[in-house]
Length: 209
Image 1 (tube, rainbow, N blue to C red):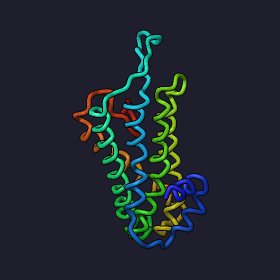
Image 2: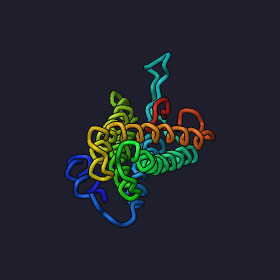
Image 3: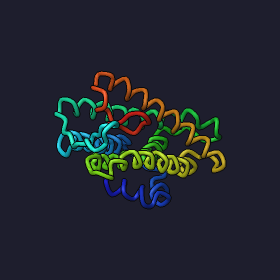
Image 4: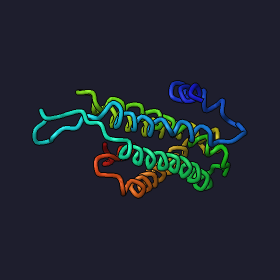
């Protein structure tokens, strides 16, 4: 499964083409790959620590470790939001297919959603850089790159899997991805409402460590 994820990142066209017509359950990859970000978040917060700075006195920055009772709820909320985002993306791809002259195929839509979400899931490893001075910008950069690269993969995967004409694949994939990202953000915020401010983290604007 990890090999499939890496091939999706490095050779998306070849991997997408090889997956056309696949059968079998679609949930194992999201369930397992979706753990990358939450696990990395717990390790970053509770084991390695994250670099926190005082905006008024930058020189007072320090690496702080938070107890698991604070990091685990945030990681759980993030995991639930990532899985929900994946499922919502697949459902939207199916629902929007006729609008963009594609076909309704739930299994194929889940394959597209898995490929599109893979860069975002794997970008969670970047949170391990949160405590390194001068590299604390890497997590935000990685999650942004993961979202953008995932959108490109969705555009490429939609025609062969859902039959969307290539000229309309951009609209089909990007509309579904945008709505799914928004839904994931809302779910993340609701689930993390009880998490202390500053501990949330995750692939959405305005949600930081």
